[in-house]
Length: 192
Image (tube, rainbow, N blue to C red; front, side, top):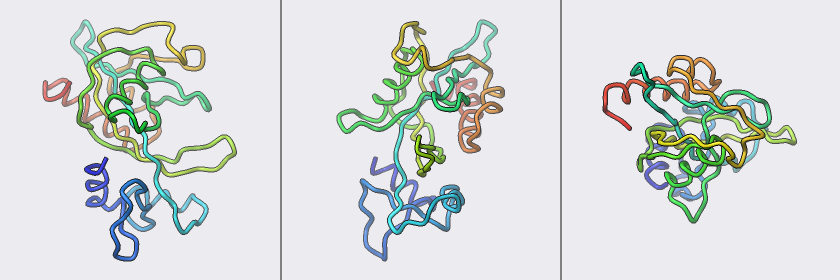
C-alpha cells in the first residue's frame, strides 16, 4: 500500500500534515486537490478526515464474437451497478482480497493481476446516512469460471456487458475511465 499512497500523494489526492510525514496507514484527505478534494465539499468538516481503502476487480472475459465483456454487480444497498469490491484485509495482499471479493460478490474464479490497473475514488454511503471518502485499488481479473451459489448471490444481480455499456452504467467518473481503458488494454493484448 505504500506505493499506492506515494502515487496518490504525487497526484495531489493526499498530503502531509504540517510538513511532517503522513501516517501511511491513514492517508490524509486533501481538501483542495484532486477528485477527492472536490468530494470534500459534501462531507461534514473534520480536522482528521481520512480516506478509507478498498480493493476491487474489473472482471472480464472475451465473448464468442471476440469482444471484451465486463461483469457488473448490483450494490446491496441501492441496486446501482458497480464492480466487485470490498475492504482491505491485513492478512491478505490487495490482489488476493480483490479476487476474494469477486468470488463473494459475483461468483467469479479467475486469474487476477498482482499489480493494480488503476484507482478510483467515491463517497461511501453508510446506513446511518453519513459518507466517507474511499479510494479503491482496481485489479484486472480474467474470468475462468462463473459459479452459482456464491456468498452474496441472493443480494445481488450480475450482468456481463460491453465495456462501453459498463462505463455508461457505473456512476463514478474515474471508474468509467478505468473500465474504458481496461477494455482497450485487454482488446489490444496489453493486459489480462
